Length: 285
Image (cartoon, rainbow, N blue to C red):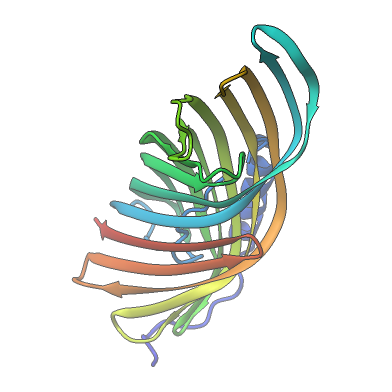
């Protein structure tokens, strides 16, 4: 299909701007956990236009906890203090719901911010006693930039960089613990995703997009626990670092125009340590 657009040369100004944004995000993102929907890796609105709507993302990944430190007391006496063994949190699942607003800053370039809430769960990863973690519904915030490098006919090629921040805390519980043992988990995360890809207009309403991406995961994992038995009462605190990446993957999505100004997205992302599914509903004005 030819939609009337003519081929265009690569926009070097947008490429330089995107490279500058990449540098800024790389320098500012010293703490980089759950992945978010990215949408088309190309600018979706013209200069001076807005888009607004909602994003939902579900991600399932494994988190490597490293450089651990901890202190433990038994019956009020110091039992041990020092380095803690590395851990792997398997099946770290996060549901995130955002309100998002974007603005066409320049021709072929838009910036966006999102605010919303996140909830995280994982199970049987610290004690191997059938324990489950379910966080509170906590505040999450993110931002990003998209730019077109080339467009013509039914194709656009561009890139997206996005970053988010969330504080997730909650309690770890297990039905196998006969005596109630409050155990608190606090996870502070930031996440960075960088993608280069293409958007293809399959028809007047349907666009298909995708490409490779890289993501960076780091942050802090803090764990406070009580362990109660007939003989002992152990209390302690452990802290680990999360520091992974770049991890590479790919993503594929589709965008359908429900009306002239309203569109919906569905998207899937996959990398070596994560699977992500996302939906969005957006309005342009």
